[in-house]
Image 1: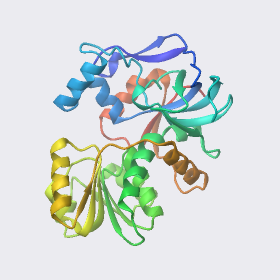
Image 2: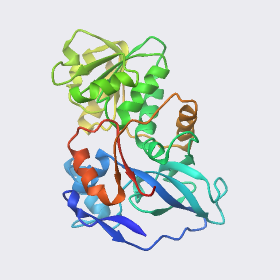
Image 3: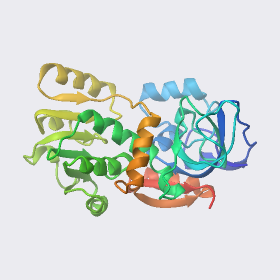
Length: 327
């Protein structure tokens, strides 16, 4: 089968289209014929190891100091069709159209992948009314947005600001917050503002022209995805008993968050999400009810993954970049 093999740490060119052996499912695994996957900023950071010192060191210890050894095919999100199942698989069957996340194992930049029915991978039947490309764009962004916003318990009429609203997670967060009845403000670069209005944002802010922490407005919930504003500025922009959601923030901000929650009426919620099939099925139902949609900026064929990585690294993508593995 064809796969994009990750040969070493570095620029996008370290990803090479190669013929590799097709995997064989174990008794508890599904063999999935992949139709679509995505390129995320997380994939790019993993590839080039432009991470914090300790996280980059951990990755080298886990995956090989000089070059990738344990994980050699990137790609976490996927949508496809079940080719075959192991004897112990109970929830899925051959021919099912599915979507989900391969988890930290990765491996979706390929024509086939084997994943366990239960475990790190999170899988569900694909919404019947969307394409494989649209389905592949759901897991990372949708699961992160749903996980954090559910913890904020947003009420009708509350004011919610999403900083970094134009990315994979942010575009789902805008739509989910609107579905809860919130007044939503999206913050991102100028080129993404029209798109944010089109998916339901009530107000938009170009972060290069206006600092939302200094405009005199206050919010019930701030969902911070990009850390372009100061921590203290975000906290001061919350209403009394407001909630600050921190996604993928560093250790120092997490410590400050705990102190804020302990010493004030405001609450800071952070941490790493727990991917669950239950939440993936919630997203599936929202798509089938036409309450959510995937924002897809560009699509590339599998052999153009290097080009897709270069584009994602510009930081200009709107929503998601999808890789079409087979048409």
